Length: 452
Image 1: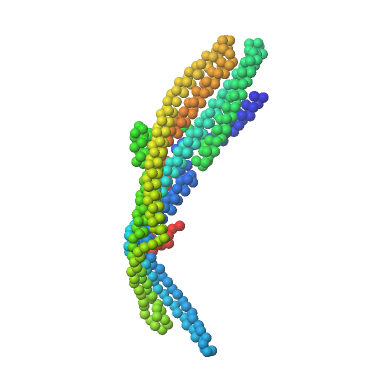
Image 2: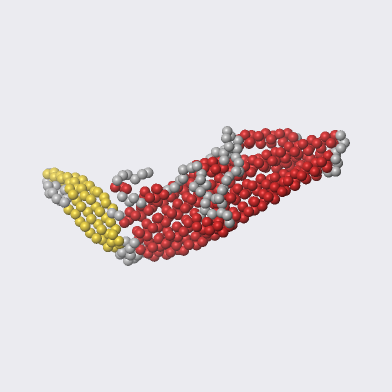
């Protein structure tokens, strides 16, 4: 029964191996490039930057003229004493309105919109970091779980051979039923561990598809970081505080909140507007030619607004204080992530060295126990335990190498350098810088229709 179960599990592993290997291998760099180019999180963040940039143009319009044309056509008729009279009038004109002074409220709103656009741009950087880190983790996990499946498959084969050996020795009187039972128990545990590895591999492959966009293809943990990684913890912390998008976004949010507070204060001040109009056709009725126009200055001073102005100012001040607190929290979170990534990297390196030594010692121990069992100085249980120790050491080594790679990418992300540009990925960089500059052209509507 155990042998039949092993055959079914091996068939499943073979199908997984075929699914994981395609016509050509996919390097980690290629996988990251695919994730960057196709992941919807980055595309969504890019659109958010563009939408935020439009607020700049909207706010700037408050300082510019508002010009509109007008035309009206009227038809009038009346019946008096059996006599019908009728008339038709047509008027064409222009109107002009511009705020000359609003206590610098619009200037504050423009600065607020610019700060929010910067925050959105940093959110795009942060989304890029998260996607690349998730993609690298998914890639490494598939490699790890594939290696664990193969290791545990070999382990099942070893225990299967030990079970057959125990049965053979029992049949010739050199072994006991206890040896056979112990070998059967070891094989059952090996099969259970093997099935668990297959389930983990399937989960990792699903995560790979989510972040990278297609099935994994013959992966490898090889990646040359060169001089990308910080050389010390202090260097990593300094880089993070000056470059991490979460910190820079929080600083931009402080600027936006300060500008919002300035705008709320300016709302208490006077507003001076220029209002004019001109009639250019049929201004005085049928049969009378000429033009007419008017120019006026309008001064508005708020006196009482039902408490709205005061509430807006208090709300803006609260948001400014909150933005400063949020910035402190963002800095602490980034520092924490740097410490975690750095310690994870150091720990993984130590684990690798320890696992390498343990693997060598466990292999020698297993070889020795097998020889001792063959001459009757050790039991089948001793062999099974020695093999389990070797398998555990190899599993630790596989996991430690995966953790080292993920920790390296985590350290890059924590220091604010995990980007397609910094990694020199073969992709077209996604940025809204040109779009932001284009919306600053406030006269574009006079030359062409706005782009969609």
